[in-house]
Length: 149
Image (cartoon, rainbow, N blue to C red; front, top):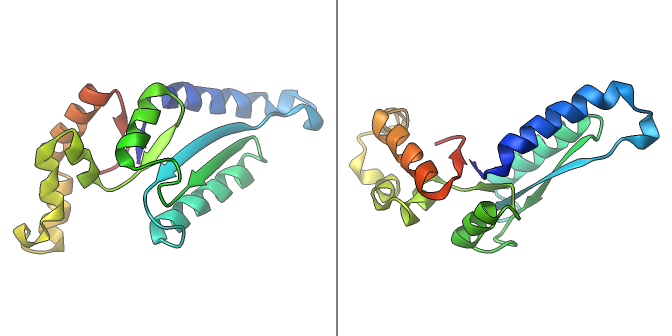
């Protein structure tokens, strides 16, 4: 998942909301909403996983935090969603690391699976300093923090 500039504030707000939950009457609680966009179809395992995470977040915060999942490019293609995160109108984007190739062309290597000997080789690449450098460069270029490969 890629996260915009607001996520630091969002996480701080979540912590504040959770900390104050015990100080407020139940009917006065407000819901903190985070929006995540994705290009995958609604029945894709990625979307199902995001929705499960959203459900667990809502459950474990007693409804204080809600994550709204927007699958199937409902909020635009990956480029449009990246721009929305940069503008602050979208909180997070989910997508494969190869989408970062729009900013860092060398990330396209992740779509060329024949270059990797096997799954272990690919996973080692994902944990490599090269991939970490790509993530850092993506953050520098876009202001968006990469949370996973």
